[in-house]
Length: 113
Image (cartoon, rainbow, N blue to C red; front, side, top):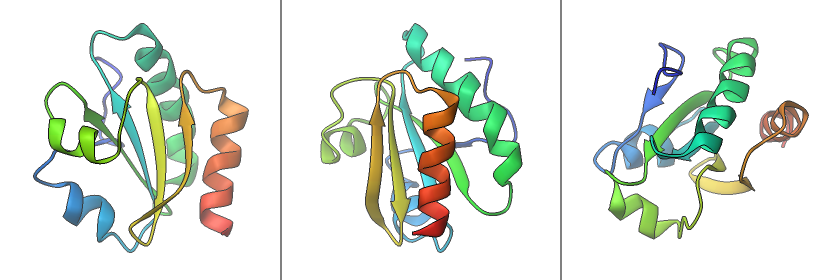
């Protein structure tokens, strides 16, 4: 997917615990699929905002087809799904295509909470 850049981390089953669950920085994980048009739209929205929060949050994607262990662990049924993690716990989520205003609210709540 062409929306990936150096602001996104590619999370995997193997790196998820260290990069997300043990992170001291709040994390937004976009569960994605290359075959999903709505994933592409959501990633564009995330990409537009992620630079504003650089250094304060970690943002990345996890491709559901390639990472079944984490996908099953968090019971992801639809892509895109965004999970907001703080101190290793899911504190919020958004399922489906996300509006920029909802994403901004979710990130602000993650940082303030």
